[in-house]
Amino acid sequence: MWNYEKRLQYPVKITRTNPKMAQVIISQFGGPDGELAASMRYLSQRYTMPYKEVTGILTDIGTEELAHMEMICAIVYQLTKDLTPEEIEKYGFDKYYVDHTLALWPQAAAGTPWTATYFQSKGDPITDLSEDMAAEQKARTTYDNILRLIKDPEICDPIRFLREREIVHYQRFGESLRIVQDHLDSRNFYAINPEFDIK
Ligand SMILES: [Fe+2]
Image (cartoon, rainbow, N blue to C red; front, side):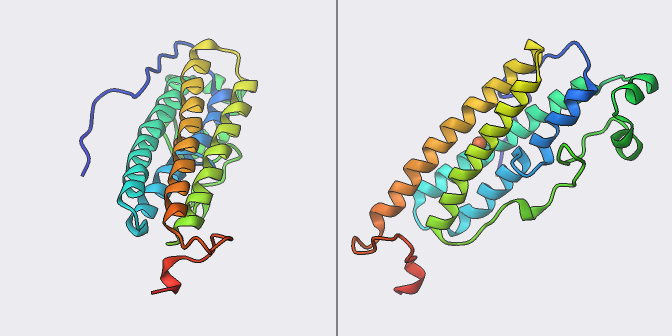
């Protein structure tokens, strides 16, 4: 179970709306390398992870990704709050607006809806952790791309925090992969032989 703390993991205080940037940042809510996919990936994979230590890491990081999703939603919300119909049209927010008004809905920057096919839960510890490491790098790259497009320090500050967390997660999944590999048969040089086959 989870306990909810009524605060963000890192403060988001945006005073200037920017619907153009909101359309880019929403990708980290419902896009292919976004926070919703990240939390669902780790919170799904943890059940079949055979080592308690690594299951704990997946639970921790999956939980933190939910808090990141909350931050991204707060950013998008604050960037689009109280927009006038003129502003919505001027900044190209009309296509999103017509379907969702100013509500939060998980989609990629180009409008593609969120889908569970953005992640895998394969039941093979090496496979899952390799995906997790790649996912963290993809999320970090997306934040780098966002930071190149944004100049407003009020937006950059929480985005930089999120980017740094992806690097920490990448390192923790690297440690997790080493834990799993330490348990493998030492003759299994290619690390492609899950316990499943040797039972
Ligand atoms: Fe992450």
